[in-house]
Image (cartoon, rainbow, N blue to C red; front, side, top):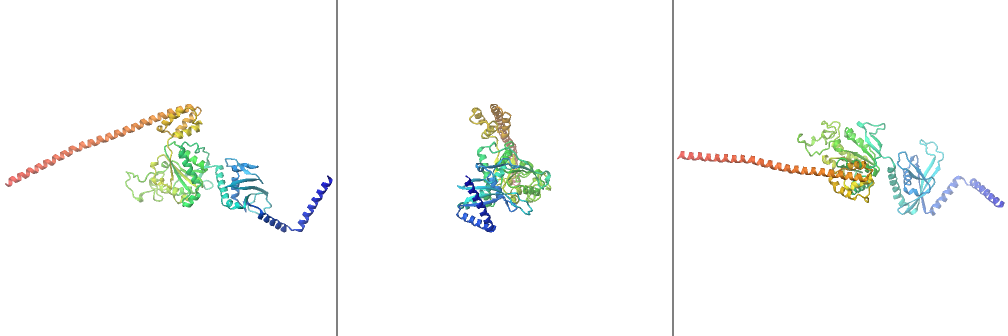
Length: 525
């Protein structure tokens, strides 16, 4: 045993002496060149390629590094052996990250790659205007040589897109509103914001499922259509008009759209905007991936149909239209000032949604809501400004089942099938809004049977009331028709004596003229 340890000590001593002799004979430059040559020879015979992605590129932060870090925090990274858990300040979820100096495998289109997170201590920085972190971080991507074109062309773009989705999902969404009177904050921003935590989603939205699916597909096509909009030469924006009776879920639809896409909401209050120039400045201060909302557009600004002339004002020419002249307010202004000083015009609002200034940002959605679509000017409703018109109707039976599931956790396989069948027969005739149904279900959420029974009674009462009103309207129309017929008959009877008297007067005149002629003839004879 002693001989074994003595032999090992002799070998270690010989190795240390050889290393010292090697360093004394061969300078560092020669050793570095030999190591570099050996690495190149190894790479020639190796079937792998290594791509380094550092955290800091010079003095700037590498966006690709952050994207890879977010991408590896998705569900694919949970299969790793060692993970790091993080949660940002404004984040709503815990993210998984790859631990220091650990590896993980990923697959893309049948190609397997390996990510390694390398962390090392940084050497002396020297004099820099921006101090660098003490640790040097980076990712190393190992791929096969034949897979290099696929990785560089598609995989890295896929990582960037996936990172953007994760970032939008985790970050805190905001609800913005324009400052009162156009005032600015300390940073010169005219928008004030609060955290947006509205829980409405398309799953909880009381609406026809087929219609909801169409809206969701349209929103997905818009969010993924950057190349399409660039190819067609259109601005990357889309307009939605939500119209229908009050209480049908227009605001809930906006919240569901924001939660579905992960966009911020800008609630524009037109009564606080003084003129068209201020409206354009507000648009310029909005960010991409946002929804710009103008609720109750028919109430906040007068945008009635210009083709409907006011009988008291008489006819006006082209140059008399205040909503076409720049700076003119007239009847299209918020304040109703006919002088047009300091007001928003219809022309300004149209340019806001579909003019040149609407292209100052990308991936934005304009949403207008109204209770009376017939009052809006057709120029505001055409395609390009309001691309999709969504009618928020009264509560249907399919929407009612969604509300029952949300508030009562009710499933179709439960009892009370007869009550549901009765509700299905009267719900269309009742014409009740989802808000009214929701309020009734909230009140009786602890007792499902009582909630269904009271709902059925309420729907039957409203259906009967609507039926009586409809019959009254029909009777009123019939009475109006009868009155019109009676008035026409009276006019005819009043006109007929006049015609008879005129006829008798003509006959009397003719007889008198004939008698005069006879007298003349007799006198001549």
